[in-house]
Length: 439
Image (cartoon, rainbow, N blue to C red; front, side, top):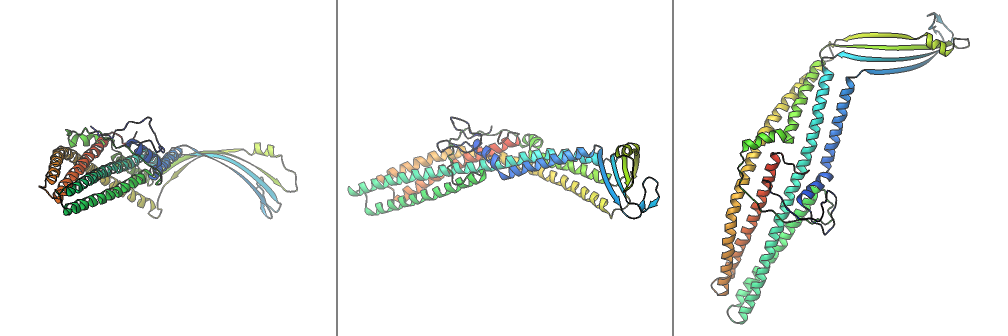
């Protein structure tokens, strides 16, 4: 089961900036990041380019229709278009033509280009989804880091407060003679050390917040208040890596991109082979013209336009013989691209299998660590309490108190860390099983 960060909100913020009193869930942070991320926007533009290429590939299968209009003045010796006799009379010629052509066979080049364009459109869609998922995952990780440093800051403040109270009790005990000035000095040093640790943890928290804002593309100067409530429902995972991988290879966008890239490379390779094969095309057209000798009377434009109408049809065979090895070079390059696409898919598939195995092991290990750390925190808490009592009775030194409490704080911080790791790794495994980072 996927671990989720939980928050009770008065309303759901789809995207945009929340006011200072609203707390952001991790889902809201991820949605905001996906909406405002520059790489996601570029991926969307790239998808639009793929769609344009697909439209162009469809258009290449349709007949091409063209028209032309021409006008020419002849001065000096020229040929009379009506008699084909050379004359030195100035003439004016006006021509009109409309024609269409359609390739019947081109070695399936245009058909394979269309199939490659379709694969590219799907690849663009998965690429956009993969970019959105990558942004959301980075935001989730940064969000978890903020929660961790918020927790360590709270532990540091708790320890500092305990040191302050113990310092005050030591001063009271010095006044009644059960403690000496050396004890007060040592406890004062402990308090100063704890005060420094609070400042250090505050700095780490600020850095983590800045990193979260950066991943979200959130205005650096604006306040970002996030929720810190975590659903503590960690459980051991019984899934096997093979089962998760069988799902992931069918839904993971990175794998789908490489599969579609391989598919497009096959079509491009076939298209390059088609360029080496003779092609056949047919066409038809209609034309007319108007001409007159300057300074003499000619038939009207409408009469000539109707009387000079001509029609034609044609068929042509194009045989590529030698083009400077251009087609051969493109075919070889397409073949190499096909080989690289196959290698990339094989490598990424093995990497996906490895990452699933690693995430599954991390989840189960973190679960066991949580169980053990909970017992350790309980034991360290009791030890720290007893050490303070022994100090008050004169059976322990301030160094003993400091050591016991540092051990307790470290245990609490490690417990928090293992819980967050478990949540993060479970979220990753959920993603491999087809659960989206954001809706």
